[in-house]
Length: 279
Picture 1 (cartoon, rainbow, N blue to C red):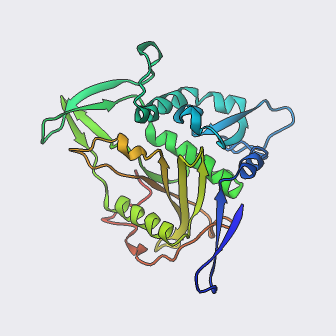
Picture 2: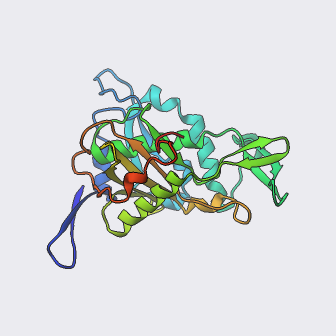
């Protein structure tokens, strides 16, 4: 799963971790640990297979070559309701809405504080938590090691978060460090210096790279896209945004084989006294 790309001068080779072939995905089903709890499997364990993201997120024609990882059955079962909810959110891109009796999402309407346009909000989904679970699985797939659920991280979801005050929506703005992360991932994608996972007929794309902040802490910056899901966000009165984030590694070197970047310009990773890893 390591791939080498050579630049046009034939002098520099870029090593990256890439998961996209049927063989890659089959190999991952033999991982010796559960990415959810981090424990190695015992012969007596009841195992399951977890789809990341769940099958419900994809049209039937796009369910080839999914990313699946082994888990304990008890660990995976605890995520069933979250999987149903995120599947129903992404299916809105296809114009599909579940019947009332099958609907797991709760909606409310409120007004934009400036335009007074009526907006629809989902109130019962921990989108950051769902994305973080997937990222932990992506980390396990790329680097063959578990990532603790309590790892310091920050996540910018593709749907804007907000608070409801009375009948009005008060949105949470992007922070300067969120914009910096977007630029960092984009810069490295253009330079082919990223590790990535491409699954489900190319409808899921996950990109990540590793670098250090001014305190020499290694962290991973990532971007995640499913069907261009930023389009789920309101267009006319709230800015659409890509799903990006970062997590702090806690070790003095990146994972073996990971794509790394110079930390040029990263002295601003801590801005206005606010750490990038605090949501």
